Length: 310
Image 1 (spheres, rainbow, N blue to C red):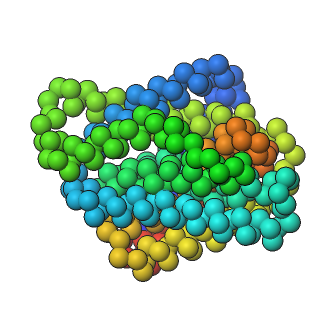
Image 2: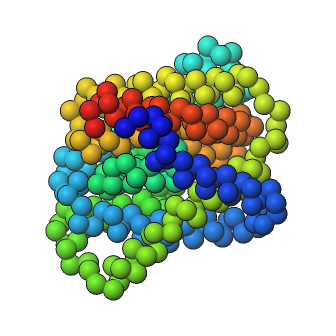
């Protein structure tokens, strides 16, 4: 598939983001509704989607595959933080003026609401593996990421006790024990229906939230261009090299190719607010990389599929 073909595959994600932003701009959606919608998505709809895709999946039916997925998610994210930290110093960032925030925001890709629809579109069979991978990413964010942005050495493990993480662990336990074959019938179908609406709704609200963030702070080339080069230029090279040469399962290679093309995640904006970081730097990098990824994402996906061989 060419880059143009890839653009056609991923364009619906950006159209939903744009629709959410436009509706917020026109006043058709209200900020007061965001928290309620996102809580429903995070704690009800997303866990249903995860369980529906994991149960019965052969991609995570042995411990070795699960270990590869979790370990790759954790280690690539931790390496991303480290590399972004070094490059932040080269860009002139210092502790206290955004270096920690730059490292965490640039170091982790949007592994959830934007990435999962792309995996579903390109590699539908890799969804279960992606959830395992994402659990490793979450672990890295709330351990290495929190310690980096806060300067503390205490790990906020309770942050991992959320609906998606619990549903991944529960789904894996059922698959590895063979009990997942008993979950059929109307209840399973209702769970699937709930999960179907997860990403259109989540992406739409994300677009609205991004519209709120745009223009709050005066943009700087150091954050916008530097963050874009790190997140969409240098780190994809590291991830694609890992996917090419490490003996990871094929489904995981497909997941990593998609992850390599993603813009910066929004979670570090929350971390910057909670742990004394620089939210303005985080917002600027997220917005800049999301806009730039409309051009870079199909190119990285097309090249990654060819080079890695997936």
